Every structure is written in C-alpha cells, then in structure tokens.
Length: 145
Image (cartoon, rainbow, N blue to C red):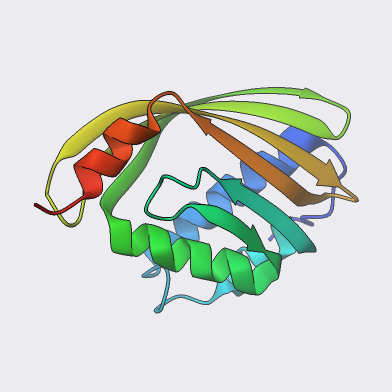
C-alpha cells in the first residue's frame, strides 16, 4: 500500500475512496476490518450527518466511523458512488458525488447528489460535512410502510 500520509487533500481522498471500495468488497461493516480505512481518518475525526437521515447525527473517532458504516449498511442494500468531482485548496476539499442507492427496508432506488466539505489535517481526514439536496426524499425512501 502507498503511504497514506500525504498532505494533499485530493490524494488523501482518492486513496480513502479506493480503500473504502476494498473495505466494502471484503464484506464491509461487521465482516471486514476497519483497519483498511483507519489510516485515512484522524483518530479524532468528526462526521456530521443530517439529523433527519436514518444514519443522522455526529459520528466521532474511528469507533464512530465504524458505527456509521454499520448504520449505512443497515440502511442501504446498495450505495454506489457513480461519479465524483474534487476541488481542493490547502486542507479543505469539496467533493460532489452522484449516488445511486437502493434502500434495504423498502427496495426503493434513488439517484441523488451529495456535496461534502472535508477538512484534511496532517494527511488524514479530520472533519466531514455532507450536504444532501433532499433529505426528506432519502428518509422517505428508507422508511418501511
């Protein structure tokens, strides 16, 4: 594996998304080791998800990130990032991701964008703020009747 500790935000994110794909291919939460992803996240990482989402709230540290991935896998049967665009200046990056997903509880399929602001410190992801265009549509698609 290439040294994950680079200070270039786009390189850190590109490597993390590659590691995330490996993590999910190895079985993901509950089956694969979070060690595949840990080098890319600060031990104090903070992820802020919209409260109205099934996996909403603030997730902190590596243990929080593991719990977040578990919550995502309980919510989504599939969650494919089909296209990503990166813009970075210094330690701040903005990532626009086009997602195609299928809700586990309902089988409903959605396509939606997520815009994330990500702060990278010392070569690791320190804070993530995802922004969804329509959290109500996502929550609705995931709610069983």
